[in-house]
Image 1 (tube, rainbow, N blue to C red):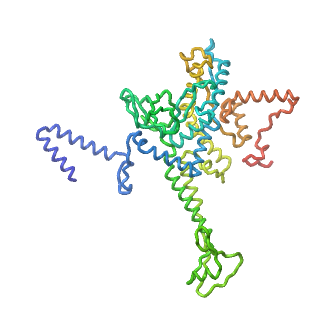
Image 2 (cartoon, rainbow, N blue to C red):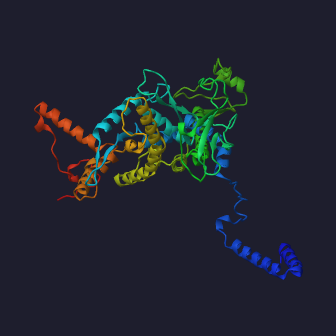
Image 3 (cartoon, rainbow, N blue to C red):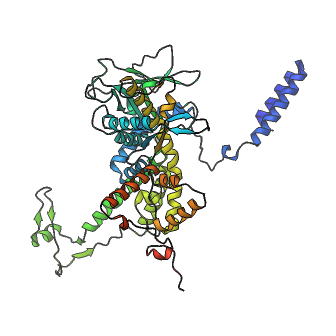
Length: 519
C-alpha cells in the first residue's frame, strides 16, 4: 500500500472512533473516486511518452485576450510577406464575397384569401433602386463602394478574426441618405480609459451584461492622427446598436474573434523561412563555379590580373568559357557541384503546403494553383467539398454584415423621407425580407453538367432557380436577359439566328472527359 493510501486508512479509523458512519462514507467516496479515475478518457492520462504535456486552458475570453494581439500581428505579417498566406486570404474573400453579395428585396402584400403571398413589386423596385444608389456612398470616407466594404469585412474576418464597422450619420446635403459605414481596426477596442455604465464589466473593450452576456457597448481608443472625432476624449463609448461586429463563435460567452488561420501561422512561418533559406542556398551554390587551392593566394591573383569590386574592395576572379589554364605546381582547381534544391525539396514543400491548406480551410489546388494530375472527377469532388466549407462562411457574412446594414439603411431612408414604407416602424421585418445571392462558381464541364441539370429539372428533382443560384445568378435576371436578347434580335430581323437547343450527348463535346466508345 502506498503511503498516501495508508495515511487515508489511519484517518478513517481515527474518524471512526467518534463517528463510524462518517468512516464508512469516507471509504465509499474514496473507492468511487478511484473507479472514476480508472475510467477517465485515455487522452487525459499522463505517461512518460507525452513529454509532460499539460496544456494551459481557461475560459475563451482569457485565451483570446492573451493571444489575439500577437496572432493578429503575425497573421498580417505573413499576409504581407508570404505569398501563400496572401493567396489563402484572397481565395476565402473571393469565394465568400467575390464581387459582392447581391441584394433582392422580397416585400410581400400579405396573405391573400387563398393563403398565398404576392410580391409587392412597386415597393420592391423602390427599395432596390434606393439601395443601388446608396451603395456608391456607403463608405463614410467616400472611397469605397458597398461591395468593397464587404470585401474589406471578409479580409478583416480572416486576418484578424473579426470585423468592426460603426454606423455613422453624415449631415451632408449632397448625400442620398445620412447613413454610412466606417471601418474600424480590431486593435482599437481597448479597456484603456473605458467608462462603462451601470457597473457593467468591460473585457477587451467590450462592455457586456454579466448575467446574460449581452453586449451593451464598445470602447474604442483610436490612434492619434486617424481622425478627430474624439474631441480630446481618450476613449469613445459606442452603443452596441451602432456597431456591426462579426466573428465566428467557437465557445459560449465569447466576446471577441480569433483568426481562423491561427493553426496555420507557425507552420506557414516555418515554411516561409525554409523557402527563403533554400532559395538563398541555391543562389549561393550557383554563384560558386570553382574553388582554388594554392599555397600563395596573393601571387595567384596578381599574376591573373584580377579586378577589385569598387563597392566591397574585394578582389574578383573570372574564368572565361572554354579556356584551359595551366597552374603552377601545388595549385589545384576544384569545380563546385550543387545539389540544391535536392530531390526531396518539392515533395516536402508540397506536404507542408497541404498542411497550410488544411489549416486555412481551403484546398491545396486553390492555395498553390497546382492542378497537375487532376481529372474531372477529382476536380468536381474538390470543388463540391470546398463549396460545403464556403457555404457557412457566406451565411455568417450575410447574417452578421448584410442584414444589419440593410436594417440601418431602411431606417435611415424612411426617416430622411427617401423611402415611403407604410407601417415600417411597427413591422420592420416585413420590409427587411430579402434574398441575398452570394457568388457562385461556373461549371467545370458545361455540356456534361448541363445535361444532368436538364434531366433533374425534367424529373422535378431540381428547380431552375437552384441551378442558376449555384452560378451566383438570379433566375429572374437570367429570364429578363433572355427576353431582352430576343427583343433585340427581333428588332434587327435576326430572330432565326438565335441558337436552338443542341444535342447534349457527350460525344458531341470534344472536351468531354469520358472516352467515346467505337461503334
